[in-house]
Length: 84
Image (cartoon, rainbow, N blue to C red; front, side):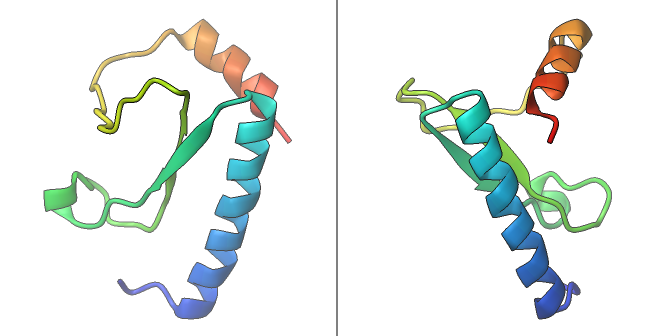
């Protein structure tokens, strides 16, 4: 809530660019953009950031964040694919 409006405008413009890149590169059917704010929302380190969650036509409306280690090789390959 402390982030200046001008900064937020610049950040959301970048979120839009990154989300468009993700949707075209994967490709996915859509995406969710999330911003957690405060401990009750699951934020553990207070700072502004956005999650861009790619979605496929799975019909799932709920997003669950698993607190588990992912496949690091698969994540590295995905990061390389999505790199600008």
